[in-house]
Amino acid sequence: MITTVPPRPVYAPESVLDWSEPVVPGELVLDETIGARESWAAVVASGDVLTLVDVGGNQSGDCLIFSADDTSERYSVPDTLAWQGNAYVVEGTVLRSNRGEPLMTVVGNEVDRQDTIGGACGKESNSLRYGHHTVYQHGCRENFLYEGAKHGLTARDLVSNLNWFMNVPVEQDGALGIVDGISAPGRRVAVRAEKDVLVVISNCPQMNNPCNDFNCTPLRVMVTRA
Ligand SMILES: [Zn+2]
Image 1 (tube, rainbow, N blue to C red):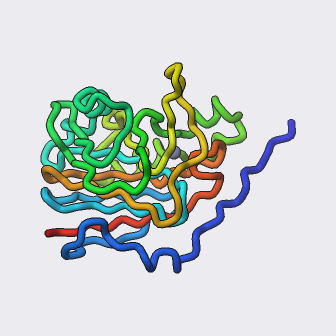
Image 2: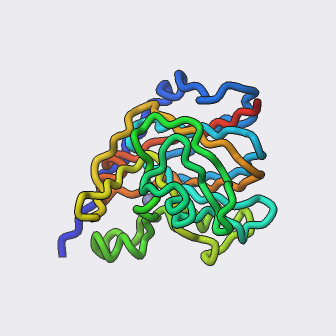
């Protein structure tokens, strides 16, 4: 059987990192790069603002949010979407927990809409969707497990997630598409913590569909304090 080898990822030049600023100015308490295909997590204190930069453009940042004090309270897609009555995450969206409580609020957004329906990739779903030759590729699920383990999280804690900078349009007939992104190099989203939260991000390693433009690139994360 002939198998296809996925193209080698192309990384954005480091110089692209130089010109992005936090959406909400303040004391910079964190400024880190999440390398292509890698994972990241940190506690963001209540009131602090996390700015995520799509350094290379159309790079999906899969994201889970937990209450830092009690990780059984975590981001909930149905609570978030039902409360706002809209399928997209936009500026002003309150990201709610499974208890209906605000975890974070989107206070700045340079992409028309952000997805929270498309879910996360993983090596099992990759092999089902794209063939067994992809099973060696780690996905967001593996990134979440790896990063979450550092904070006491396990597979039981992996719930439906946010996909910053990923384009999943809901068509007129209700169909979901995973199509070319509408983000671009340097586009940003900013979320303010409404309580102390643990934010876990998988810089999506997917190379079998257009969610990352077939080109995995770094993300930059900055946290500012008023
Ligand atoms: Zn992914």
